Length: 198
Image (cartoon, one colour):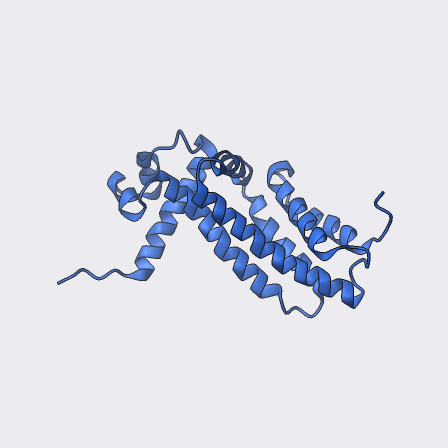
């Protein structure tokens, strides 16, 4: 009789491996981290890592597969909020929250290093970026139409800058301070103050 797979157990085990590996990738680097390191941190046998994932690169990608799922969920949660500016700021809150993690900056550095070596990873990150950009663009456009966002802003361009501002927190924010309040302040000022950009 064929063995059945419990989807919840599969998700939980993969998540445990992913989360343990994320800390190791951030602290030791992708190249230096071994399957044995990941297994030890996840509390499983060394061979189990490759039962759940085909290789180490797939473990790294799983971190950003989760980010993609989170991006879809964040956009969906804020798409129909009545005040589009508050919806943008709500997205900023959620997108910037992971920057509070002390390992976030180093993990982003490892991501940048890996992008040129893993086409699947690059595709995942590109899709996640596009999902967020589409969601922000729609909200900025609605905010401009409603008069709560500066009328001279191009929605798609402004959405890209909001993403750039949030992304910057992962590499530049003081790890001892919560970056989200400052992100909200910067994004609010950017979206609501019109003016000559020459």
